[in-house]
Length: 212
Ligand SMILES: [Ca+2]
Ligand SMILES: [Ca+2]
Ligand SMILES: [Ca+2]
Image (cartoon, rainbow, N blue to C red; front, side, top):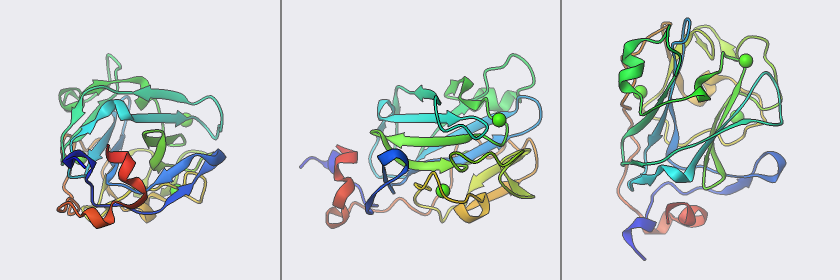
């Protein structure tokens, strides 16, 4: 086995919506900005101990309660262990220059406004999600100040895996999101986590193939 196979956080594979597999790994959304105007950005964190080929990652966005025809986004490049990949809003106006400067990619992926679901896949397996698929919450999920609209949400340093159940009741407070005031951008571009630990071959389990 090569070292590239190794990862530490290996938990059971489960079946999510429509028979799509899900697995808890240390690749997850670490920040979500839904601010005023076009101040929007999302961060993907590589909390594994291996570098991550971003071509293995996909994000789907389902708008306004829809369960079909998501907007689908794929990536290129390498996300090194402990780093974040930042996707910022591509609009010409209304975007904080810090968002633009910190973004690895400017993309319509960020065309969400609080009632839209984001699903993060690794090798077509669900590894994290924001929102509840098929549920239109009206304006946002959560209770102020921890909601998916008009706040900056950052994953607590103690969170080590994502929310792999895309269909259950959703409250960002229950997923380890902490809230900052609207348009906070000072946390974008890095993530503080307690969760990168040494490789432990015995815990590879069912997600070994995820880290080929
Ligand atoms: Ca929407
Ligand atoms: Ca969930
Ligand atoms: Ca961050």
